[in-house]
Image (cartoon, rainbow, N blue to C red; front, side, top):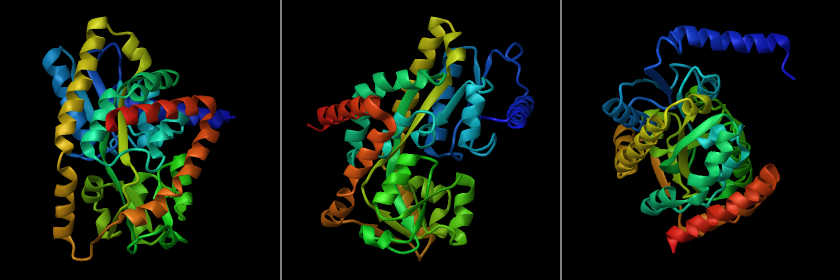
Length: 341
């Protein structure tokens, strides 16, 4: 149970953020606030600014966007959204999984295909994504607007890796996500949860020996400078989601709600175009910036050694989520079959 001191401390922190934003629902009804987890020009930033573009072109409202660090870490911006200080937030299931255990489904290794066009079509058509997930988010006071892919997950390490045995004894940074921890345990590593702001320094000082992220994030965050061995394991895609404070959204007119949903669709389509070729472009930037970088692309036989560990992660997912998780995973697999076959 939260102590009175802790509760007051949390309320004080939220009040300070509200003051810093000049928050007043009455005075700034036409200025909406949106925070995301990435840097200028990264995928979430592209999505946010396309979302902003549509809203400002189709309404009298303006949208103020806050990038990573401006209002804190991922957990901070989610708390601010649930408190109503922010109207919109973009947060990956890697962090939302602590609120919504079923959201961790995206971290079951080798569940998602690796072909970009198939992945995009899955997000467009999936019943699990577009019908089942919104109900789960609603229970946490959130209106899910859009889930979308950012890029294939790439591991970096202090030395090349070709099989699970190579990860023995290595501390690999993970988000605060139990299922992602389970994945790296299955892969043979020691998962180490860390906030994003501490990852570069932890790699630099060898406190951790690796991490995973989409290649554009490895490039923009400079992670290759301190973790130069890139390993393409093809085990998953980084997924993220834009959402609104549920009370705020429900208080809007039906026309404004429809406009916001149209803005999310527009931003999704524009972002999908942005990520085409982005991974190759980012990898070329990395290779041209450092002579120390190595790139390991696992063979099918090498992938099978990692893939053989995936069923135990599915079992962990079932343990965490119960019958609702089992039903969701079954629907997820049906949706994947529909787009792959």
